[in-house]
Image (cartoon, rainbow, N blue to C red; front, side):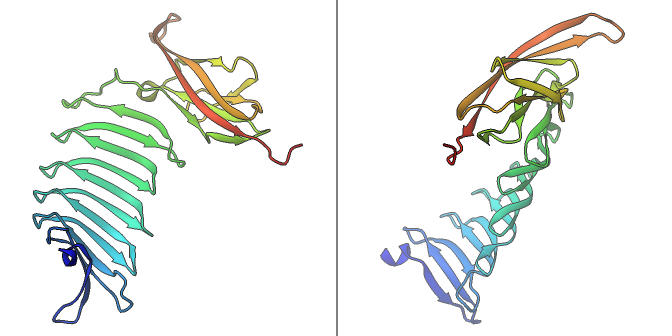
Length: 257
């Protein structure tokens, strides 16, 4: 049993070296080809205990480089993603057991880029999330399984360049109402009560600036008012009021006396 719990180094009849790992019960857990230096190099296969392929990982001189595929115990492709220097770098896709695409996105490390899409089992678009160049969500939309837009769904969130700022610098943010973001969404800053300026926003009408907050943890609280106005009418109805909060930190200047 001790032998099976360890990794074995094998030499096949054709002279190709492999690294083989075993489950404690003796089944093969993975097989990986090795180069002349004894480093993983080539297509490594990982298995479930029933012998089905669990994942295929492409190695290049010890690093995962290329298309990774993962499979379910019954053999259907669950996901695929490109990897570079050991990190996700490019398209990521997930699939239903039927082979229907479930989700697609573009990711670099843990940062999403461009647009991600999720699908209902019948193939209709479920949701679409749009990211900016910094990996922040800037808009999203939802659809019902019948293909109609689910306009009732909204999730407010903050857009901030960073959550930690040095002492003496400003903290800036925007408040966005997701799929129902529009020019008739008004924002009232409840906290902090003073020291807040504003300028034209990038993703909403207004970007807010908290001027030189003191060191420590701060919480910004705003109230979003979602209005509706009939075209050509001066009457505006408030159809939704949503409070949201966001915390950020100000790091002290250690050299300051």
